[in-house]
Amino acid sequence: MTEPPAAFGDPTTAPFWAAAADHRLVVQRCTGCSAFQFYPRPFCLKCDGAELKWVPVAGTGTVYAMTTVHLSVDPALEPPYVVAVVDLDEGPRLVTNLVGAPAAIGDRVSLAWRERDGAPPLPVFEGAT
Image (tube, rainbow, N blue to C red; front, side, top):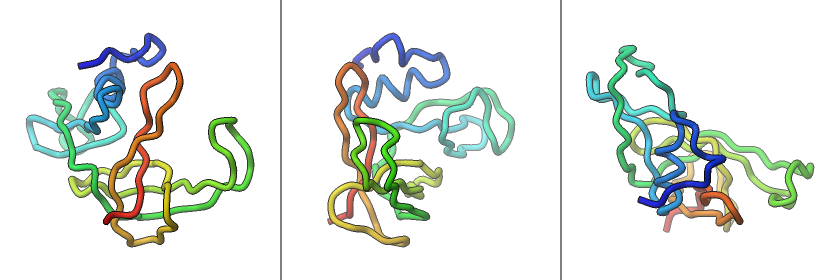
């Protein structure tokens, strides 16, 4: 597994960024109740268990919500761009960007990656084919 840059080494999120560096999307799964969760936490939201594993997910889901941003907040994101909440097929929701062809709420999407200089790539989603 590729080590993420030091700036991405927070103990709770480091496994996510290390997997992203290898273009793999992972989320936490509780070993007690089997619930999936994202964003990373030190405990399970469903049963309060402390034993969580990082597991790969399919990288497919459905657009739950979305909005188009028209203001520049980061030089790497030229407006307009779409911010979306994607319901992953495994259950958790992920805040991300939609790229490529236009999508709508309820559309199926699949994982893609936005490369970044000096940082692990970001998971983004595009219309499923």
